[in-house]
Length: 234
Image 1: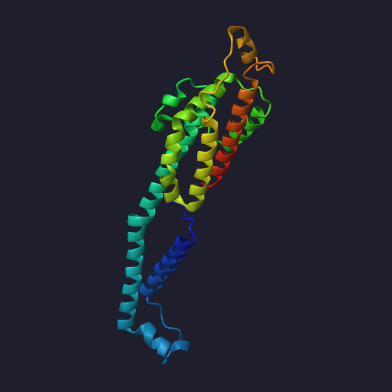
Image 2: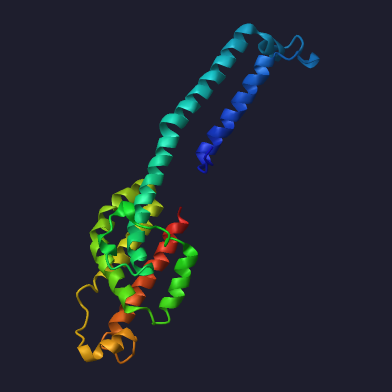
């Protein structure tokens, strides 16, 4: 059974367990302790009418809880999982273009996006690499292309993030902002002559695209940092 983390649902589960245990004890009809002889408590515990009413209440509570699990709790958990998968796929679409240097990453439909890049350890490692300012220029270009393509998708998915929790909505807004800042660099690539292309490939500081690449690395690094925070919410 899926682990129930919500506090209120844990209380309901505990009450259900107590009710089930009490129902078993009631059905066992143990002998009444002598200290309850000729007392109101003893009368209630041995009264067939009281026992029938008490057992019916317990059975009703158990039935209601099972109905809640089947018709509310599990469907809601499944919807939450599906929503998170969709949101994660949108984030992964950008990061996967960086990880695998995918020239057609911006064309990949969300259901087919590889989400292996949503690994906090891998993201932290890549953040360290980005700080060295030696990233392959093609990785930066393809990541930018995908961010530009997905920017509107991030905005449109805010409602889904809000349906999960306020914390997810807040973090998704930050993700939208980071994708926007990265996407703003689209189409602003400096012109490079054929003679300077070698400097670009070498990531030389004399390259006319040196500052442009530094800006892309910084924006991608920001996106990765916020992605780690997003994943921590799950």
